[in-house]
Length: 154
Ligand SMILES: [Zn+2]
Image (cartoon, rainbow, N blue to C red; front, side):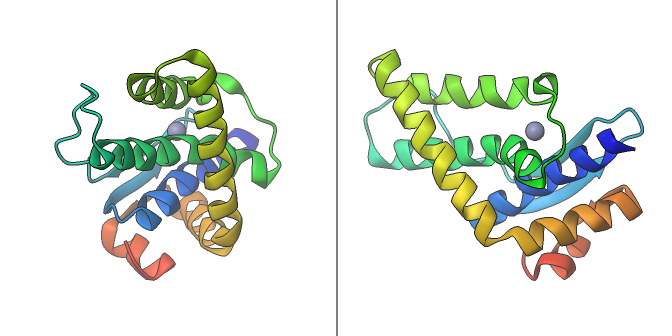
C-alpha cells in the first residue's frame, strides 16, 4: 500500500514536469507490483551526439528534468524512498548530462542545478501532483483526456 502511494507520486511527478516542459502526456499507470509508467511525447529528434547547439542542450535539460521529477516527487511527498525504483531514471539523466559536458565536475554541478530547478517547479505545481497521485491511486491508470481534466492541461 505504501509502495503504491510512492509510485503514484513518482509517476505524477514525471507527468506534471513533462507537461510543464510542453510535452504531451499520453497515459500514466501504476501496477499491483509497485511499478508504474508514464508515457509522454518523446523529445523529437533528440540526438545524443552532442552537436554543441543550444537547441540540443535545452532538449537535454528538459528530458533530464522530466527524468529527475519522479524521484523528487517521492521525496517531497515524504514517503520512504527506495533508490532501486529510480535507478533507471537517474542513470538516464546522468547519461544525458555526460553527453553534453566536458568533465565529471561539470556534469555533477549541472545535474545538481537541474535537480534544484525540478524541485522548485514541483513545489510550485504541488497541488497538481497531489490531484494526479490521488486519482492514480483510485483509478490505477489515466489516459490523456483524464490527465487533462485533472491538471487543466496535458
Ligand atoms: Zn521514474
